Amino acid sequence: MSIYKEAYGQNPELTSSAPGRVEVIGNHVDYNGGLVIGAAIDRRVRLELGTNNAGLLRLVSGQDTKPVELPLGEGALVPLQGPDRWANYLLGVIKKLSEYGLPLDTGINLAVSSELPSGAGLSSSAALEMATAVAFNEWAHLGMDTKALVKAARWAENEFVGVPCGILDQGVVGFGRADSLVAIDCRKEEFQSVPLPADTCLWIFNSEKKHSLIDSFYADRHAECQKALSLLQRSLPEVSHLALVTAAQLEDLKESLPEPLARRARHVVEEQGRVQRFMEDLENGEGWETTGSLLTASHASSRDLFENSIDELDYLVEALAACPGVFGARLTGGGFGGAVLAVTSPSFAEPEGRAIAHSYQRRFGHSPQVIRLTPDQGARIDSI
Image 1 (tube, rainbow, N blue to C red):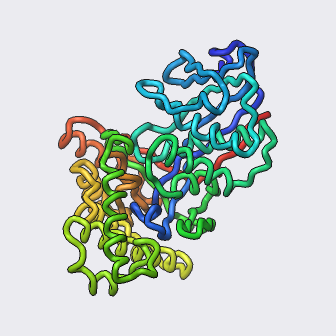
Image 2: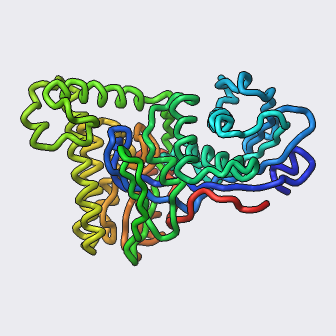
């Protein structure tokens, strides 16, 4: 029995789903206006939608079958606090879509289920937002395209939930394709599908150290980057985003940035260079033996310059980098916990993953979750 039918005693009118995403390279570059690369993955969040006669918005999740009940109407849609605040990701999308004609005069039932581990850096929040966006776009016949839905979902996270993220998460979740990566020019908000080279495997090693971008240092890093840009603009008024500063410009102006702002800026500028080389390697058909080293270098920069790694992630990256068949590894997502991405050849398989998991358990007292991922389609309607 579906969660929806169990909670509401009837079948839903439609079902949508959206994938989690893995950030392949471009750590904290998105809100700094740069190029980032990610992949939608074959673990999804599902949303079932129907109507009720009570004039209420009811939401239930697979983790809590007691519905959150709210009055409808634009003025009633305000961020929740406490244990129900998970619903803010949906409420923010609904509030934004009301500006595009979504009616708020009909009672709505929603049920959410997820295959994604929370707090692992796989963007379960963006998956929930995009599953909500495509569901209501279909249900209310709004006629919005994917880019407009992505921007509405990002608004929900930035303005309603309060996380100052860039467009990476919602963009990858919206524009994902099977067997492909998604490249995003975050300044121009342009999206490109890039075929994943054959015989490439993606693995996630979830440290089980959950992060929360609302409660973490994410907002602090965002503010530090904006401050660094502001100081650099005194000499470079034409530069609109930190990722557009060149390495040569940063070197010339390094004395104008105090620590830790200098480290944050150096990470963003050098990470943007790694992303550009990564894209060039993919386009030129370079082997992973060369390209994979960019991932490991990205992690070192996140660890040393951006300081958003933790001991568990560092240990996993070091163990993976020493393992045959692993081309590169790095933390993925916001950091401060979460997971490590490894790009491997097909020769890397379950036994190697289990060996790393066992060594991690001996070191930290608990096992990481090991998941092999396949790039998957973005947010979609599954049934009507």
